Structure formats: C-alpha cells, structure tokens
Length: 124
View 1 (cartoon, rainbow, N blue to C red):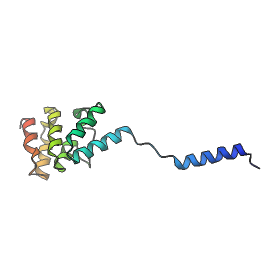
View 2 (tube, rainbow, N blue to C red):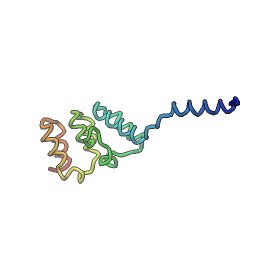
View 3 (cartoon, rainbow, N blue to C red):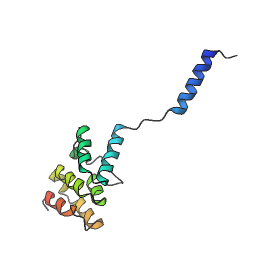
C-alpha cells in the first residue's frame, strides 16, 4: 500500500509534468514585437521598445528577420513608411552602400516611397 506522502509527491510530479511549457526567449519576444511594430507602421512603439530593451537598430539589423526579410525590407514589403524611414536614419551609411536593399526594393516593390529615402541615405 502507498503511503499518503508518497502519493502526494507522485501526484505533484505528474501534475507538474503536464503543466510545464518551455518559456519563450526574451530575444524571440523582442524580435516578434519589433516585426509587429514595423508591419503596423508604429514608429513610436518601435522606438519605445528598442529604448526599453536598450537596443539600437544598427546592432540588430543583421540579426533580426521578419518573414525572411531584414528590418528594412520588411518595412518596404509592409509599406511602413514611418518605421522604414526611422530604420534608414538609424543605420550606418556603409550598411546601405552595397545597394542590395535598394535593388531588392526596386525589383519587388518599385513604387515604394522608401526607395528614394534609402538612396539618399546611401548616397546613391
């Protein structure tokens, strides 16, 4: 016969194993928030999120991807002019000089109002 304390321990372990879910990484949550704010063209919330997380656009530009695109391409694809302009202004000129983002934007979203802004910042 099982004693009551052993039964309680077994029940607690069983309940804990069913209720456990893996916690989401803080970096994943930050990336999802950034992508959502860009898609929604919400520059103020994007700025606030970056500031509260103590992160700069130029530091995460190569690491965060939204729907397979970098932050600037995601802004162009989402027609998010305000957040796209914010991203462009916070990137270094050298990160835009190669023209890859401009070529991609012209090929996929030729009428985007962000193209002249990117060209101007890149000096092209």
